[in-house]
Image (cartoon, rainbow, N blue to C red; front, top):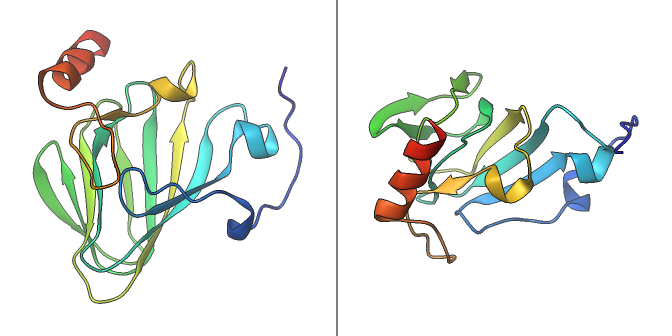
Length: 147
């Protein structure tokens, strides 16, 4: 059984994940601090870069923009995101983030509740330059089954 424990985690202590675009750092997780209800991290997105479209079949996502100019597509509809704004992304809503500004954008994210296992937590709906993603009919089928 995982036990939560107070622990300060620096961004430099966690592995960078660039698989979906951007630089995502999952900081407070079951593995790093024994979290049991969700996980929190930071996304660093360079000008012109994006985090590829995906959705979470088990978790809501809470986002807070620290700095930079972002645009988020929610089920295909674009919305501007400015510094000091928060966003709730409900379960099963497809979303993609783009840095539309001239400087690095930083956002904090929290997902909860946890998926039954980490691989089930994200469903990719488009390819990225970084590699493998579930696309097309297979992704749509997975989404429909879990709705």
